[in-house]
Image (cartoon, rainbow, N blue to C red; front, side, top):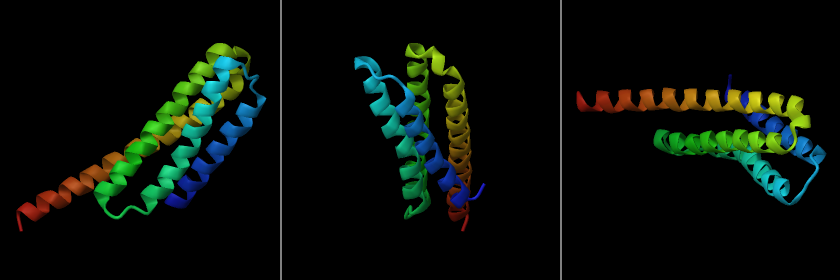
Length: 127
């Protein structure tokens, strides 16, 4: 997947989470989870955009680690919301699956970047 497609998916994900949250009845507890999940899901795309503008490979990796954390956090809050609203299971499963896919792609990108960086460092040692 190219970076423009990943940008599109992360933005669409934040929008899907926002629309889902509008359908969840808010009480004192769930309101807090909703606030958090809206922030973390939007942060996935925002931090990916920042990673695309990274100044170096280490900067890119650091920003992608934030994307990883935010995607995982979003999954966690989806799980918590499910505990209070099991009637929303169908929507939560779909959103959780997308979050997990974004997380997997992010981790793959981090691992690829780390390998590339280590290879460059190794090559510098032998020059």
